[in-house]
Image 1 (cartoon, rainbow, N blue to C red):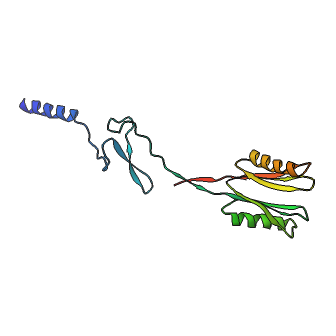
Image 2 (cartoon, helix red, strand yellow; image 1 turned 45 degrees about the horizontal axis):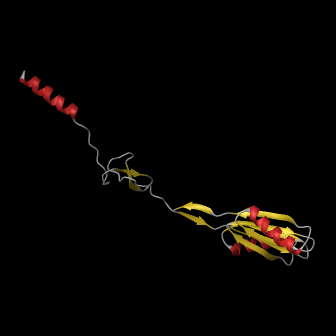
Image 3 (tube, rainbow, N blue to C red; image 1 turned 90 degrees about the horizontal axis):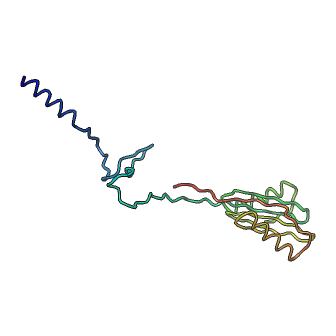
Length: 168
């Protein structure tokens, strides 16, 4: 009988125990999280040990510039363009190359612009290229300049090269 009572007592004690897991070295209120080659500690959701009012950690982003350019051979009326280039040098070289591939001999850069938009406007005797933060603003700026100096102005070309966000 004593053996049965002892056995029941041990069984009762075992059923009341909780399983304990290792924390992986994380502070109170956090648990380990891992991925492909990395491990970190993250807050336990709705944890009492997590600091009150704690904000999620913001991972800063890196922005890559995107350049574009317009080049023209005014005497032949030929225009070359480029977009989404990593530097002004490559954007201008690509626009001149595009202009020459269309038959231009004396192609010159009219504008190179990063992280925004450009517009090329022609009037009766005037051409003008302006940039802006968006396509509407680039067109507005180019048209305003043309309307000041010429008549019969119209937008011939517009495009945007916007920066690319790369998480770090």
